Image (cartoon, rainbow, N blue to C red; front, side):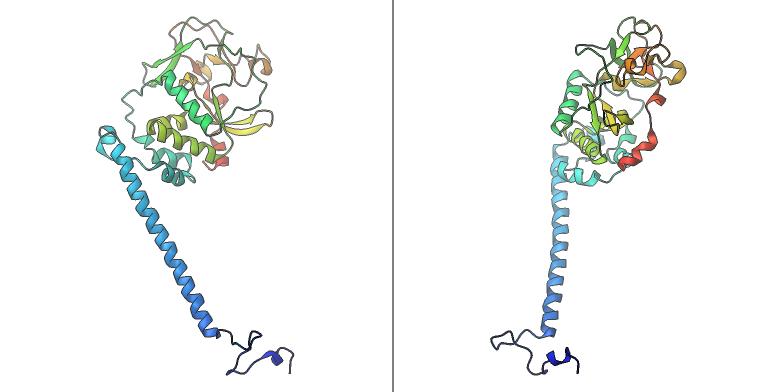
Length: 293
């Protein structure tokens, strides 16, 4: 007989716990374990029902606060806490659909952002812990003011920026990084978009997604980051290589002198002329996937 067999007890009297009392029979133990599993499953379902109920009520409250003239009378608001949870795994295209970016009427000019609007966008960024990146490639004076103004284009592009005065070839048109927002993860960017929608509007969130791009080799650590400029320079339209009138005079300047954040007039620009850049210089669409976007 094996050693383990010597431990077996009679079916009528099971092994005690040292004080002569008997332990719970196996069949009763299985029933208790099964009951606990069913109870936990019930609690899980109850939690889901309560969450759905809470979302319905919070959405209803948000809808009650929504302006009746917005969105053709349809309610689009979702409570901020639940909205943030909903968007955490969304791609850029899904975020744009979520905030109804494609439903905007392209025939109606979008309003020009005011200085207060830009300031609010920067304040939201800082409130979420946003900082700048360490990068030496700028020699722009702190008090530099771009010689440009925002306005509506006359050729159907929508908003744009224009020369506020005559600008000579080689003159600085933009510089510095104080109004740049940087995001090192997809969720950081999603959280910012969500918060802009919560505090401002869906249209403002759509603008952020339209203006953002992914830039490799940023900062002293050469990171790949999502970047948004939170000032009028985000309104600059694409002129391609042929029509771009601002950028870097590569044949006349070293890369360091031009700088990561600096732009110069590529030719003489007359007052009132639209300022255009070449999107191909910094657009890397395939890199969005690295952020789950």
